[in-house]
Length: 116
Length: 113
Image (cartoon, rainbow over all chains, first blue to last red; front, side, top):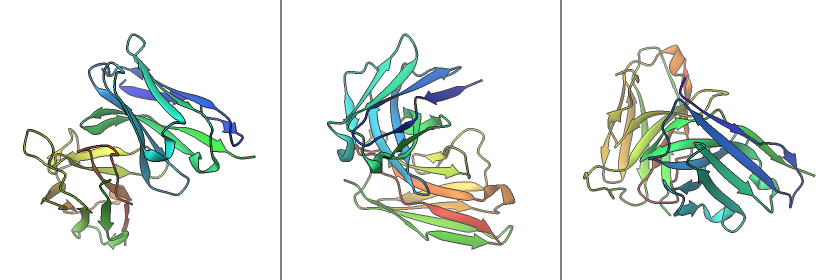
């Protein structure tokens, strides 16, 4: 079965850190860019970050620059999002997606809650 | 940043009545050598991740019913559902993937009367 599976979401206090992972199975991701997209409760979709095929280029939405780091491990078919200095407004479901120009495959998402 | 604005915010149609969702970009999203606008449409049902419906403005993703069609050019784009079915109840988003930040529209909620 083709799938992307996210993990690592949790309840964390403001200022804390969290690392999200996304594992691909039955799906080729190494030749493609990969992305994280988030959705705050009851809100729309917001692109967060993208990494190119070999990890040499990364892109971020302004609100997470300097706090989040996207990376990937090609050998393990995995994608990561290191999130530091978390804020209440980072609370959301985080989806990983394969970026084949548009975002053609999505995981089910993992919930990150930032609250004291 | 390219701002994507959808209209309407919500739409209620009868079964079989055509549904039209509009998306306007603040800049042209023509940035690929294939001369096609970098515009896609996604469907998100409650409790599910988004699903790609259409890319390059009008190319349907594999497996998407042909009642879904995309059109447009320049800064104005449209998703048309020719004969909506009950299973099409969802929120629909447009997105530009021309350049980061890869922005989405705010979403249009489709309901069936």
